[in-house]
Length: 227
Image 1 (cartoon, one colour):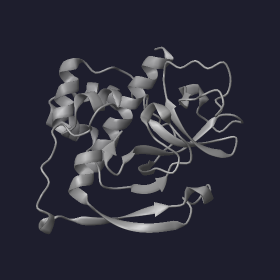
Image 2 (cartoon, one colour):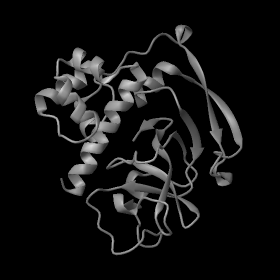
Image 3 (tube, helix red, strand yellow):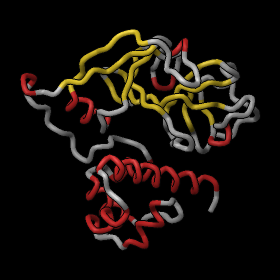
Image 4 (cartoon, rainbow, N blue to C red):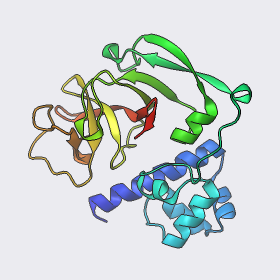
């Protein structure tokens, strides 16, 4: 398996496990609901085999997510846009904004404010309403029309969670910046603000060694648009 194919399989497996965890499903539950054999589910679960088109759509349908998002992490997570309930009946949750200029290994920084946001809107826009927080971007990302200081929705990143095409806040040489993961990008050296105008990094640029990008959070979108 080449590295690019491996990263695609790993991303698929990660998203598969993530949605199942949200539903409280184990491999056996997914196999039963998708009508895909438990042995194949096991290979998809661990990222050792690519799902056939038929099985991909069967699994995506069972999970209620789009096949494109499940396979590649692109497009909308939800299979079909949901309909927002009446504002009087909506469930609101408090989303905190943090000042990441004071971010540490153990803290997102001080809380700046707390904003009530509709849960159904978050679910429709980002595919989830849990684990989300707000912060201002520490740098520009011209390719995505994002500017330093823009307020964005974020989600914490687990080790090994990087996805091709994903946009992340990262720490490089101790400095916070914004990066976009590109599996096909092949830089000559370590990523820097000067030589990466569009902030692209490859999977091999991610890590904890000097000059590598330590991913802090995934950028999901701005308050009025999804990335």
